[in-house]
Structure formats: C-alpha cells, structure tokens
Length: 311
Picture 1 (cartoon, one colour):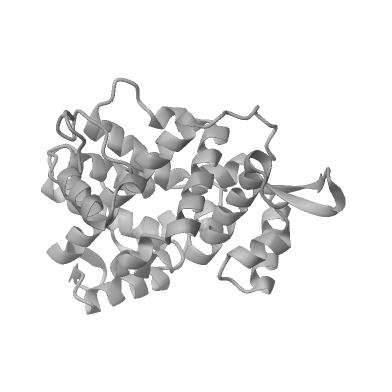
Picture 2 (cartoon, one colour):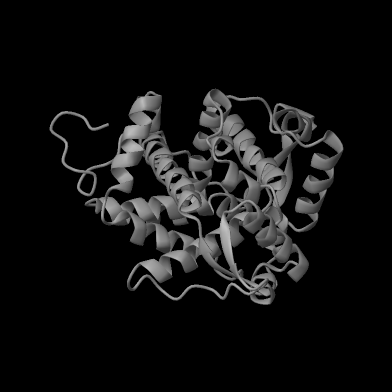
C-alpha cells in the first residue's frame, strides 16, 4: 500500500509491515510480487540460502530446524533487549520461558552452543549470581542469514540509492535486526504459521535450506540467467546439507504425496506444483516487507558501541 506521491515498487521502498493492516499488507505483498524484478531476485535468494556450508562448519545441523532456530533467535533477542532496551537479564531461565522447547531440551542445546563457542557466558554486573548468555557472531550470522538475504533481494527489486543489505555484514547491525524481528513476533505473532508448506519444511532438519534448493532449481528452469542450481538427487542434497539420503527422501516423498512436487522416478524433483510455488512466493514477499520495516528500525535506532562478541 503506497503513500501519496510514491513511485512503483521498483523505485520506492515497500510499506513497513508495522504500518499496515492485514488488507494493506496483502496489497503490498501482491504489488511486490508483480514487479518484473521479483522472481529473479528471489531466485538468487534461494541460491544463496541453499549454498554449501563451509567445510567443517556444522551450521545446518546446529541451527536449521525450527525449534533450535527459535532458541538462538530468542537468545539474541534477550541479549539485545537487556543490553540496549532495559530488559531482564538474558539468562537461561529467561530463555526457557520464551521458547516452545522443553526446559531440558533448551538447556541441552544451550550447553552444546557453549561447547562449540557459539555463545559465551558473562557475569551480570547487577547480580553476579546471574550468568548471562551472549551470542557470538557465528550465531548472529546464521540466524540473521535469511533476513539479510531477503533484504539483499529487496535491494535488487527496489534499486535504492544506498544498498542496505551490505551493512548487515556487521554482526552488531545484524544482531539488532534479529532483535527487532523477535520483538515484532512477540508482539504480533509469526508469519510462518500462515504458510503450512513452508512450515512443513522448516520443522525438519535442514528442511528450509532444502526447500530453497528445490525452488532455486524451479527458477533456473523457468527464468533466464539466474545461476546454476544445485543437483536435486537425494545423494547430492544429503551431501550438501550433511544429512542422510533417507531423510532427504522422506522430505521429498512427503511433499510429493501432498501434491507439492512432481518426481522424476523416486530420486529427483522434476517440478513444483503452481499452488506450492505461489505460497512460497507469497511467504517470501511478506518476509521482504517485514525486513524492510526491520531495517527502518535498525537504521533509526541509536547505535550502541560495538562490543567484543564471543568467538
């Protein structure tokens, strides 16, 4: 939903999600999808999201499943809310109250993050009995990867005078964006549960990256010059995402049984159903609108001094 005097979406920022009611949000989403630049930019988002992780870097295994992602997402929120906005100390007990995982599961995953040096603990200056959980740049980078890449796609679509996504290379800026995203989710609920096909993949190990690999292949077959997609054989996808071929086969088979995919034999996705692609594109357009609003919040907020994040 544009404001008076605004140019079409390729030349002007989309409206902030916080400024729109449900009807206005859908109108802004539809207008974004109507841009000729939308699908090529989305194809490049999918290619980047499905990229091979660095060797020896188990980020897909650590974070790319919804319950584990949410633990890290809210851990980042708690730290920045305490540090910059006067929130309660970001302790394990505070985190356990915010996430749907059981307290025991949350504690176990946090312990794994500590061992991997993805997070650090520090004493609360106001009460040394509290051990504060501080996210490291690797956690911030992975949890903020999709928002950063959505903003990069939006930069491609809108062609702003100053690109926004490159500024999120700094963990401090990206961490603040994740904080504002989580604050919005806590206040208004998540968009994800309105998209059952995306949710189906996000709830499974490496499911969302696998979904973006499949969509990258879809766009490579339907759009010119968007980049070479990954191989969609079960073996290739399993190797790429560091999971078993059986797990990949189960995900693809379930999707085919639901009518979302057309398979070539039992091994490869040959096509995605039009309704499935449409839901994915609607999800992505709403995410772009969401990150545009987050960027406005990050850009206008007071920038706290850089801290030495955990390594």
